[in-house]
Image (cartoon, rainbow, N blue to C red):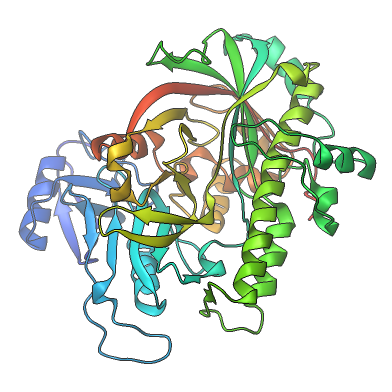
Length: 486
C-alpha cells in the first residue's frame, strides 16, 4: 500500500471479539485508531486470514481485509457464572481457562470452544490453550483439559489416540539444500510407503522388543487395524528428512550438524477412531467414564493399547523410510518420542491434588525434550522444557504451528493461486522437496495455511516454559504417493 493511500479495514479485538471498521493510512495510524475505538492499548496487529503479524507497514493490506488487534498480553479468559443449571450446564466460574499466546494469533472461535468446554463438562478444573490453539470439530486442537481424578472424557482426547512425534537420528550424512541431485534421487526412492505390509512382518514387529526413549515391550494386539501398521495416515501426518541448521547447545552429545534426522508424525490410524466410537456411541456425548467402573478400566486399557500401537507405528514408518534410502535401520537412534493425544493422571503441587490431563494436540513437558514442527515450508525446533514452570501450562507445550485457516479455505485459496499443483512440490521459502500425490492435500497443507512457528516458539520462550536446543530445516517432506487406504 502506498504511504499516502487510505484503506478501509475491519479490526477485531481479541479475545473480546469487539469489532470496528476503520479508515487508515499507516501502521501507526491503525494502532492509534484501534486504541481509540476499542478503548484498549493496541500493541499488535495480525492478518486474520493467515495470522501473520504486521510489524512495519500495511503493504500486505488491501481494502476490506480483516485484521486482529491484541493488547500484547497473555490471553486469560474468565467465564461468568452460569445462570442456568441443567444436566449439561455447570457453573463455569470456578474453571480456570488460560490461553498462552502473545505473539501468536488465536481465533476467537477457538477461545469460545475452550469456554464451552469449561461450561458444559462437569468435573473440569483447569483448561490451558497452547499458542497453536485452533478450531476443532467440537473442542479446539492445541489444548489441555484437567478434570477431577474421578473421571475421563474420551471425546476430549479425540479419535487419534496416541498420535505424536518421533525424532530419529540417522546415519545419513549432511546434505546441503543446494545438493538437489541427491535429494531428487532420494525422493524417487521413497516408494511403497503407503502399501500395507505382509501380516507375517507386522506380527514379528509387534512381538519384538522396541527400544525407544520410552520402552515399549512386546505388544500383544490382535486388531483388524494391524494391517495399517507402518503407514502414515492422512491429514497433517508426515515423515520429514531434516538437517540441523542451528545447534544452540553444544553439550547435547546425541546431536550433530553432520548427520540427518527423521521427524515422524503419526498416530493410531483407525484403531483410535474405533475406540472413540465404541465409548461414545449411544452413551451421551458428555458422559464421563468414572474411575473404578468397568467402562473406565476397559477404555484406559484400550487407550494404552492405542498409544503403544501408535509408538510402534512411528517406529516402523521410520524403518521403512530409511530402508527406501538404503540405510541400515539398526544404526538409527530415536532421541524423542512423545504422544500429544492422550490422557494421564498427574499430581498438581499447587493445590496438592490429582487430575486427569486430557491432551488434544498438546505435547507433554514432563517427559524430556520435545520437537515442535512448523509446516513443510518452515523450520522445526527441538526444545527442552523448563521444569519448574510446567504446572503453569498444564505440563504441556504446543505440538506444532497450528492451523491459521481451515482445510476448505486453504484448498480454495491455494488451488486458485496454484492451478499447476506441481509448483508446490518444491517449497518456495526453503526449496525443500515435497512428496504428495494427493492434490487436495497439497493445497490443504500449504505452509501459509499454518501459523508462524517462530511466533509459537517465542511465546513459549517468553512464558519461560522452554529453552531452544536446535532448529531443523526440512529437506524432504513425505505425505503420500497414493490415495490413502482408510
